[in-house]
Length: 502
Ligand code: KIV
Ligand code: ZN
Image 1 (cartoon, helix red, strand yellow):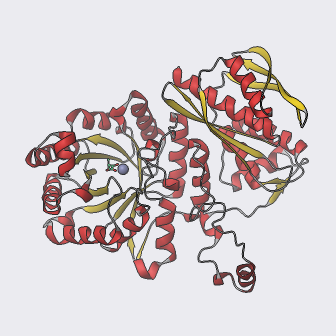
Image 2 (image 1 turned 90 degrees about the horizontal axis):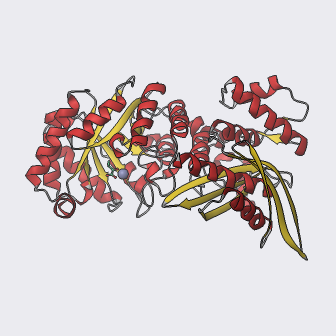
C-alpha cells in the first residue's frame, strides 16, 4: 500500500479564509496538534508576507518538533532568503516556492513570457537548494496552463533540484476526470518525473477539491495538500479529514493510506474551528455534528441490529467523543487533571489552575459535566488572548413587557468601569453597554449561538465576528448563561482587536 504524504496548509492557505486569521500563539497551538495528528509537513506561513507571518513561521520552526515545517516563497531571491531565515531553527525544513504557469497569469498578472517564467522557476529552486535539499515547486494555476508547457516547467524544476512538484488547481476549475488525465499526461511526458514526488493542491470552488485530490492519488500523486475543515481562500481547500477517511475507508480501491492518527481528527477540527471562529456546518462529512447522527427510524433499527448497515466509519475512529459523564461538583483537581490527560491536554500548572477554577464554577451551575464541556473550558484557557478588558459583572432585566436593560461592569486595564444601556433585546443591551465602555468603532459582522451538550443547563457557546478598519477578528465565549457567553465572546473579540492594534 502506498503511503501518501499529508501536507497541511491550514496555517497558510487556510488562514487566507476571510476572517480566519490566527495570532502566533494560536498558530503554535494548531501546529502542535497537527504533529499529534501525524501530518508529514506543516506549511506554517508565507514569511515575506508580513513581519507577523515571519514571526509565526520562525516560532513554529523553533517550538514545533515532529514534522517538516514549510514556508512559502514566490520565485524571487528575497522571498526565498526570508523563508530560509524563518525556517532556520526547524528540525526539518522545506522551502516551497511558486510561480504561475497559465497564460492568463503570465499575460495579465506577471507580464512575463513563458521562457522568463521557466528561468525564474529554475533560479528559485536552485537558490532554495542552497539552503535545503527539501525544495517544493508549485506551478500556480497549473490546471489552466498549457499541458506541454507545464510538462516542460516540471522537467526543468526537477532538473534544478525540486524534490516535490505541486500541480495546484488554484481557482478550483478542474473536474476529477480532467485532473486525472492531467496527472497521467505528466507521468507519461515528463522524462524525469520519477525523481520527484507529485503533489496536488485543490481549491473547492466547484465543490470538487476532495474528489479531484483523490483522483490524482489514484493516478500516482504522492502528496496531497489540504486543510483542516477544508478552510481556505474563497470556497476553501480540500478537506484533510475527508481525504484521509476516504483512503482509510476504501483501502482496496485506492491501495493508499496516510500516517494520520485518525482518532485525533475530531479534536483538531474543533480546535481549528474554535481558534478561527469558522463554524463547521452540521452536515459536514466526517466532523460535522450530524455526520454520525441517524435520524430515520429504519436507519436506527438497522444500526441496532448491525452497525455496518448504515455506518461506513465508526465515530470513535475519528475521535468523536461519546458524551461521557466524567466529573461533577465533588471531583478534585487530581481527577480533573487525569481526565484532561486522557483527553489529550497537558496544561502547565498555571493553565491547569485557571481551568480548574472555571471547572468548579461550572460544576456549581451544571449538574452533569461532559467531555465536551471540559474541552470548551480548556480550549478557552489555552488560546488565551491578552486581556485588556474582562467581565467583572453583568445583570439584565428583560421580559415581554419590559425594556431590555443591561448593567455591565468591566475591568479595563485594572480600572473598574460601569455602564447601563437599553437595547432591542438583552444581547443588544449588553453589547451597547460594552461598546460604550470600550469606545469600540468595530461593527458586528456575525453572531452565532450553539449549545455544547444537550439539556437546558448546557454550556452555551457564542461566536462573533467583528470588523474594524478592514480587520476582522473572531471572538468566542462559553457559559451556562447565554447572555454571559455573548458578553464574553464580544469582549474576547475586542481584546483580539486591541492586541492586533498593539
Ligand atoms: O492555490 C495555489 O495555487 C497555492 C499555491 C501557492 C500553492 O496556494
Ligand atoms: Zn492554494
